[in-house]
Length: 145
Picture (spheres, one colour):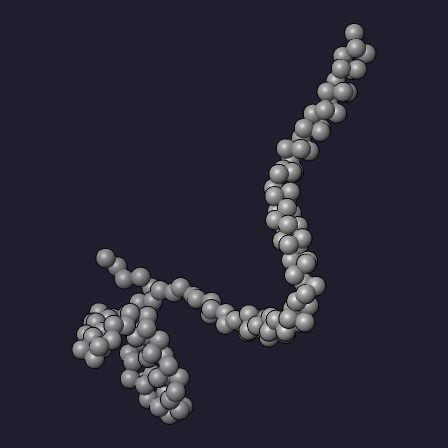
């Protein structure tokens, strides 16, 4: 009995393996991708022989465009942070936002803080020291509710 079962399972596993490979790799997709390109090559081949000199001129233009894609500006990586700030200084952010709205701008809090960092970075050492000593030290951490 074991040999007859074995004989049946071997062909079934072979056919199952064929089915598994056919389902694992869809044959319709690659064939669909190949057919349009093959048709395009067949249609382009008669025209390509007549337009061989014309094809040479777009190739340098395409290579000139390729470096433009390489020079694509990458976005800066952003960092999310939280900090404690006195309520009065937090109110100053709102006041600065209102002033900028009157000038026709609508900055976000982060844009105002970044602008302040740019101004601090542009100061010389004496000016930075003066600005930092004017800011009182506060206790860090989350405020108690």
